[in-house]
Structures are given as C-alpha cells and as structure tokens.
Length: 383
Image (cartoon, rainbow, N blue to C red; front, top):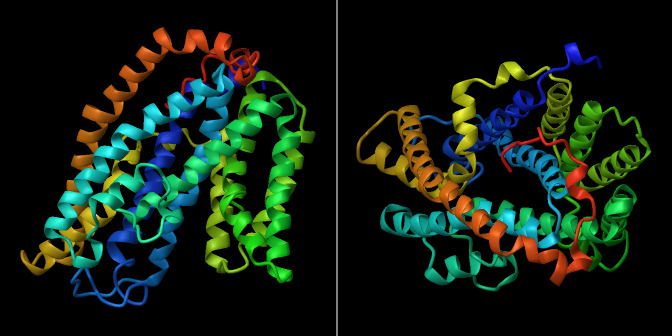
C-alpha cells in the first residue's frame, strides 16, 4: 500500500472503541428486553406490559465480539511488553480495581432493591475476586456477566504462557494448543470419557478460543499490512485450526448465531482495511471508553432498576429500560473516571519505576526478548 493512500493507523484503532460500544449495546438490549422474561426466564422480572422478540437474545453475542477485540488487543499488548510479569501487571491494573468496586456496588445495590434471586453474599464477592467462582461449590457470581471475566483471565494465562515460552514459534504453538482443545472436545463426545470434553472447555477454552484467535489473526494482518510483512503460513495455520474448533464446538448454534459470527468476521475485515473510520463517532467512542465499567455494572443493577421503574413508577417499558441504561452509564462513567483510569495510571507509574526495571535481572527466563521492537510505536490503542 502506498504511503499517500494508507489510512492513519492511530485513527483506525479508535474504531476499536466504537466496536466495544456496539458489543456492549448488544448485551444491554439482550439483558434489558429479553433475558428476564419468558421463554428465557420463567417469570417476567421486568414487569413489562409488552413481550419483546426472542431474536433480541442475539445481543448476547456482543460478548463474543468482546472476545475478538480482546484477542486483537492482548496480542498487541504482549508484543509491546518486555516481560511476562509486565504483561500481567498491565492487565490487572486495567481490570482489577474497577472490578472489585463494581462487585461491591452491585452487591449492596441489588441486595437492597433487587429481586431475591439476584441476591448474593460477601463470600460470593470475595471468591469472585479470585476469578474462581465456577470452580467453588455453593458460590455464585455477584453479577452473572462476570463469567466472561473468568474466561478472559484463563485466556490471558494460556496465551501469555505460550508466548513466553514459545514466542519464536508462537503461531505453531498456538495452533497446537487449539488443535489439542478440538481433539479433546471430539474425544469427549465420542468416547466414554466425557471428562475430556470438560478439560477441552475449561482448560483449552474450546468454545471461545476461536473468537480470541480471530482477534489475534486480525491483529497480525493489521500489523503486517502496515509493516509490509507478507509471511502468511503461520496465520493460515491458526485460521484453519480455529475454524475446525469453531465447527466442532458450535454444533448447538442456530443459523442466526452463525450469521452473527460471520458478520463479526466481516466487520473486522473491513476494520483492518480501513473501511470503518466512519464508525468512530463521538457517541460510540464515549460508550466504548466506559464499556468495561458498564459491562461490570449493567445487568443486575439495571434489571433491578427497570423492575422498580415499571412497577412503582409506572414508566413505559422502553422508557424504563432507557432510564436504567442511562443510570448504569452514569455509574460506569464515574467508575471509569475516578477508579479505573487513576488506579491504572498509579499502578503502572509505580511499576515502571520500581518493578519493571528489575524483572530482566531477577526473572530473565520470563523476558520477551526483543518484543518491544516488534510493534510500531504508533500502535497506542487503549489496552
């Protein structure tokens, strides 16, 4: 691509925030209009007068869009880091402070005004801070949307270890990791050992790795398009492995779900080719900038608010849903501005001065040799 016609890479990456907005808006529509009414839920927790179409459940696939975005951004982050500990410091600084406060706010708010089936305990919250909720008996998520954070953390663990120990052969190693998950899934289906399927789902994340891998592939295509790197064999290997695993692990998907997945792939194809700059408008960029905090806060708090607004204040359905979304958005903005961003800045500033300079000396085996030279410095997307 000639330099004069090349789209501005930095402005193109702003589109990621717009895509985050699309993802969280889809999730909001699902949770605020269809998730807590029949047939998805035995009763109508919203108290709505009207019944909304079940195809709105497709909004839940906003989470899969988040996974593709995460694969893109996390692989970029790995290539910008010089050490495994630096990568994890950056991840936890970005995610953990807002997560802890959001879970506390959700626990208090929902226990105060939410339906009883939404109530949780301090033990639920504390276990949730370890990201082990699915594996601890008699514990529930304070906010059910947190299931995807567990998946994200497992993905970070897997990809960071593969990158740390096989960075020179990452594409081959990641392909083998995907292949192992697909094989175990198949063996769990056709042999008397269903536990193999559980290993595939919980260790190899077979249901979600195809989406994360799509993000990795799109990042590599994006980077190589800018640097002129034409090597494609490793990318093709990952694509084939991810496609096979997707086919194996989505046998229960409906045709609309497959079509939404295809739409995500097409959207990202347009994105890396610079055809989605028009999507980076201020409202979507704003929503995208608070999307993490909004995701943490929106479901139980929002649905509890809707029930109160419909039943006690007698607001029309969509006005109640919009009011709840606005209230959660205001909370998310506050959490982003006053907790998420300052905590991340303070943690990274402290780590850069006291921790990162010592990592290569104390833990040289976990250093990413030459990693910081592999990514152009203009790739400054929010991570």
